[in-house]
Image (cartoon, rainbow, N blue to C red):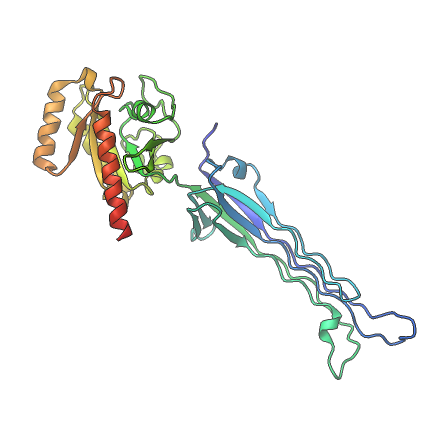
Length: 338
């Protein structure tokens, strides 16, 4: 399935129905009073979050979202009904912005949470509404009022507990396929992962949490280089980061770690300050000199860093890592509850 996480739509609410000009016409009542009903309000354009949706594909390919016009009023004081709403179903985690101003209109983070993005126009009043003691037979009625129209920029930010980050080919997909039921594409070359993958892990406390395997980032990602900002934004909602570094590569682990940290710092201060767990991957074919240098770097520069050595293929160290992730998430949940 193609992963689509941005799109634009034009939301057009329905116009209100026209009010009716009518007079009672009954036998033996030669001068029946006005009985024109009101027009119904136009339908709204509504965005509703649904956990069964995972991309914006269904939204992207229908640009115009138009609600129904309100039904016109009729004689005998018959009011028109409200026009049908146009309901757009989007994934949980969808951010809705005004395309012109960039203003955030809504951030839909819960099941069935919804927002009216374009309000239907008010129905026009029928002539029965204009009766007064001095004006018993008004020949006045209103046309329906136009509905709102707004162009929207829609963006999906995945909601996950742990964001797995790292340079291309760091072993992110292999790890998530090992510790969860997710089956992302895994191969021994960079940029195997072109879309975020989610994996659900059963926790120690009877709960479950979600890992998000982010496509590999490269230098300049914060400016859109490579997959860049297209996927950096998906780690904004995560509670903590799991930073994977390939220990089998001859290139300095210290330099690779610094490169990615620079991209996070430049992208968002909030993201760069998230709790971070570091793991050296591919320990079954480790380049020992690089690993020793990296461990010395952590000892001197980041003495409080949480560090693991793992091999997802050999299932070495993964149990300890997952246990720590579970405990860290549980602790963060308790802090937020306070």
